Image (cartoon, rainbow over all chains, first blue to last red; front, side, top):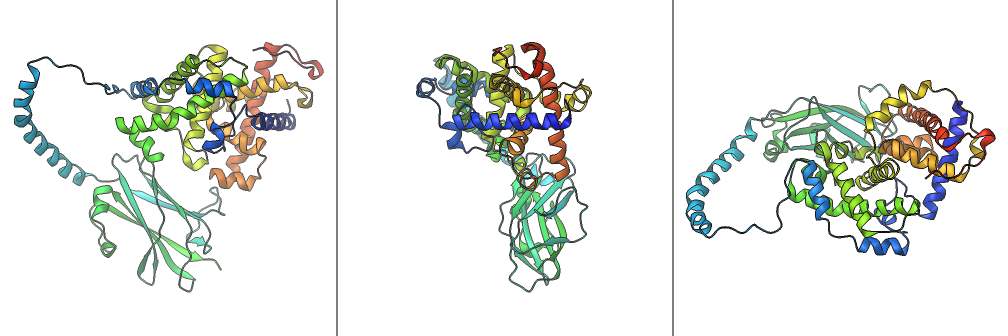
Length: 238
Length: 209
């Protein structure tokens, strides 16, 4: 099959898929949740209504993760157990609580995040393009920023983003998403309230959750331990 | 949703329970839709059994398949899971086994399919049944991302710039995916034609399943 013939077949399959989606027998990968749930014939809807609860699905999921599904009903205990339990709990609970509190307090303090790099681009710039030394930003256009760790991070990470103009930091009100790897992605728009030009920067602070909890904007010159500062020069496009 | 998945894969039982509650209707509806498309009689027991098998498939090996989800590619988690569900059910109904790993698809495309002996098929002459078989085989063998690219490029016929924006890929990557999809079709035609008989001049075929 030649390339153009394969392309033609793909287009034919695409048209066939459109017909299936219009008839409801297939669902688009861009469908909304409501669309995906709608359109089944009555007998299938009735069958779905009779499907038993989700416990089996939950057990299958837990098994895949190497965990035991918690029992829904606590197993019966022997008659002697409550008495022992009554004695055991006070004698063990306090040391256990103290140990847990110590671990919670001490463990995160020692966490050092791998080094991060910031990759930022306007949506109009393609990923394949060589990065410019300064990020070209059109006021109001969508900007995407990715903070990428050298290796996967083992703790919860937070990030905050600011625009730096004349030595002053203005928060960028976006909600960064944090991936399981520790990579952070923020996407949004920004319109500066000052005359645009060059010399501004996009500044990101990233660190473990406990370190970021202590972070204040005033600490920019000397951020707390564990908080990394990443800076990207910005040129505003008129 | 991303946080819920992250906590679930971090072995948080309550997050896992919530995620299953969220995804169960998606999985069940997708199972039902494949059975409907295949003309099967609806049976609550079969729906439940297949749904449970899908969850086992999604979470096996420490949730490896779910870890492959990347929201940045423009595919929501429910749609991602929906595609994996259809893939599982189609494979299970045809072969009695779960589908092969995603790696097989990605790798085969670049090595074997590129070396396939050319096959002459006139798409306009193919029967709808054969198109349905081809489409189901594609859904069974392609990764969720490949299916999403097919949806954007060939079902919705979106412009290259739109696909670039929706998937956060470079134009080169999108072109590469287009090429991969072509190779996938070549491979599927080679697989299916021996099963369904010759297609001299694109004569319609009887449904094989």
